[in-house]
Length: 85
Image 1 (spheres, one colour):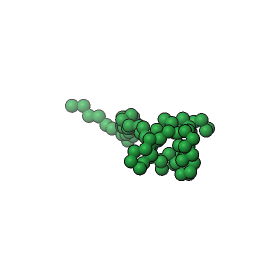
Image 2 (cartoon, helix red, strand yellow):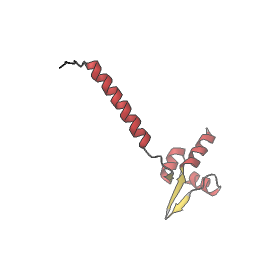
Image 3 (cartoon, helix red, strand yellow):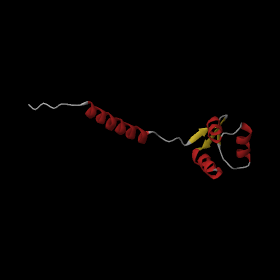
Image 4 (cartoon, helix red, strand yellow):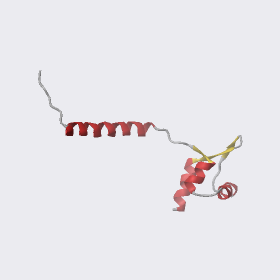
């Protein structure tokens, strides 16, 4: 039976490869959100309640209201953000 010696460098390399593979596996499987609540949109756009309401009223963003909560399409918010920059 052959005896193999592992060095600290071997273990460090194994750790790097393992973490890299785990990161790639879990980052691919995370679902992307399709809808955001108002607080999330305000945080992304760095705007107030009034500004968000104006964006809704003038048709810049077209959210859906379910119950008493507005839901905003992520793609629309990202498009608005990319146009502003």
